Image (spheres, rainbow, N blue to C red):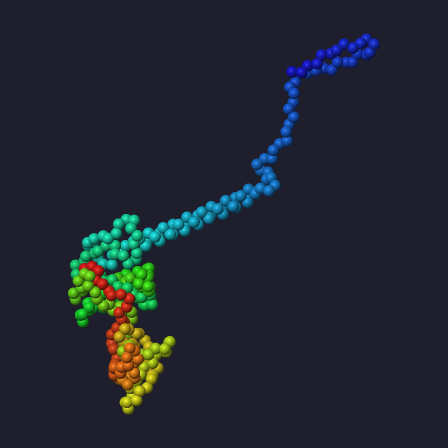
Length: 295
């Protein structure tokens, strides 16, 4: 504590009045106050800017989470295995964690006499195939066919053979012909039908782009080329929407025309009469021999 004491003054000088003193603590000089949190120093973002940036970051995280959820749901749906027929599982060929392709067999199902036939359809014709279409299944060497149905179409293409093809599963619930497991059969998938139409053998039709022509043999033996409009086209027959009439004679090959190849031979063939057909049209989808997988 600081204090002051009066001092004596010489007599020849007037005495100065003493100043009263008080005890006090020395004052600490005040420092300038720092800016409060509400003050924004130059060069920093304001609270509004910070809130907008945080909101955008939060929204980006939400969008990413929604995308991850959609991906997970898609993967779960693709991992679902649906049996093409009802029956009893005879064996399971996959384990958890295995990597499988769309055409791999996951299990073998036994359902009495019912069989499942697996085949492949080339990419150029897979658009014509739909689940639920009727299929005629004919064992190799047989003339009798059994009725089946397309029950599954692979989503992914198989390119192991060099060309893209899709696996197609056909179910035959009650075959009236012998289809032993592991045997091969010819499949005719009915992609369209037409009743009471004019048809010709498919080999009688010549195509050049979108145009189609047929050689017609006249009553006087002359040969003429007629443009035709095609309807449904199968592997063995083609619908003629216009250009021919029932009873016209078409030529499959010109008898006196030379065919060049390894040697020169006379073309074989002859006229065939056009007739109306009441039934369905379709054809086997080439791309691999259909195999009876299970029974």
